[in-house]
Image 1 (cartoon, rainbow, N blue to C red):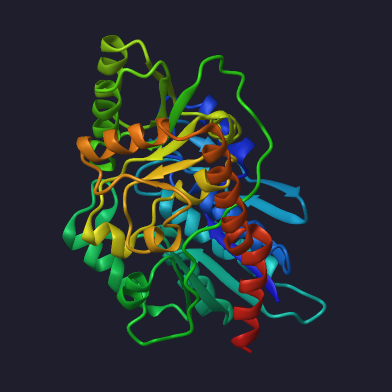
Image 2 (image 1 turned 180 degrees about the vertical axis):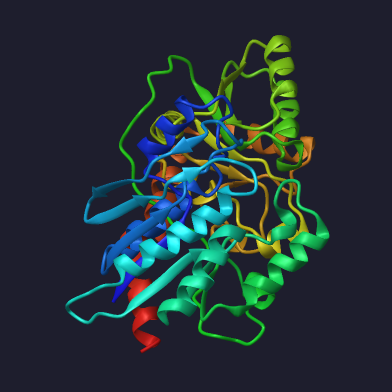
Length: 382
């Protein structure tokens, strides 16, 4: 079996370089998840990635040429980008279809499976047109409810859900997502997350708690800052992320312990996570969010080598009840109580929590483990 993976997830170093040369940085959301999933497929299969680079604004830059790279047996094909309104998506689909046709040629007669980030409308279109033209099967990776995406409108979200219901197979994060996009009960494998071990460390001099993620108020970072600044511990709170940062900059001016480091590279994020006293997911606990979404940073935090604090989640809390510090529904009071609870723990208790959480998550959701699950699933489709 050969895998062709349709995505806008780039190699981490290429994504960082892209953001260095544009005026408006691309959103890092989903970059890490798909990069790990690609590598999990590559444990047992030949993988070619067709990627259109996620430029955040038209004419910034106006054009990017085709590029290809090979890394750890994975071939990355970056489609040319004609970054003009009305033609950008059309050209991506046209060039993508041609490239799929070139990549499916296989003298060994292996089947090809198209894997697609189904949240992305342009990639859905590319997958369906390619599958029809070349008679390929499609596997949709579904990481969120379209209605939960920033700036989503109900009419467009409903149309996206309907459009996602016509793939052959599914990789949803949760049971609720499977019910949403797979009403005909086609073969599926639920995939809550993927984790990997890291060994890079920050050189930051003071003890600190760490948050990395979207800076929108709805994801809890404002509440976290308010909870932290209500304490008097001689530790810092380092905030990293993408999005509106006005509130964070105000907090930096009011409390010298709050530090804002902006949008970090993946490697720098890993370094901060590994050296933190604790990594914090403050996303408020919400019924719809819990059903359709799993905090993208949770598994990354759990395998960082540092303890994890998180608001409660219907799937994660029962599974890791004793392996994280749980902060209730994510109110200021809940987060403050969790911070106090953590700070009152012994050093041995903190180290034990970090070690056990890392072992548990890597055993079930490490890249090798997910690779084995994917192989078993694909074999069941034959």
